[in-house]
Length: 101
Image (cartoon, rainbow, N blue to C red; front, side, top):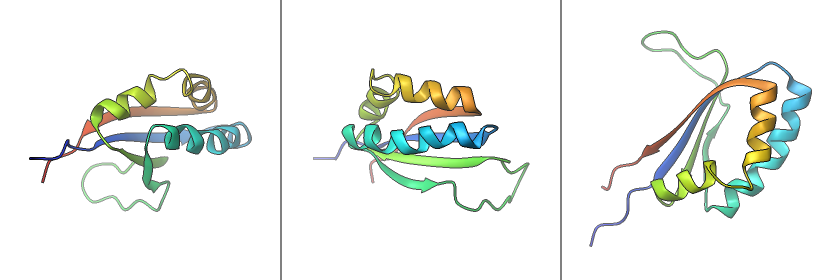
């Protein structure tokens, strides 16, 4: 039987208040862990290959399924943490279904 494809939260984040954003960085790992997530990448160096490279951070978080990733981003636990990110940065956030290999 095939496994359920993993789900990914992909974020492009341009921080404009580093001091305020520190509270987000401290709070979000615990909420991610509650929903079975793990970081794949968290703000590492970016090399543009085609088109314009993002100017901010790229974060990818893997979850056991797309449903679990959506549960995380829509959770009551994440809402106040997300508000910190929204207040201290400009960001785009996506939930993407992985492939069942």
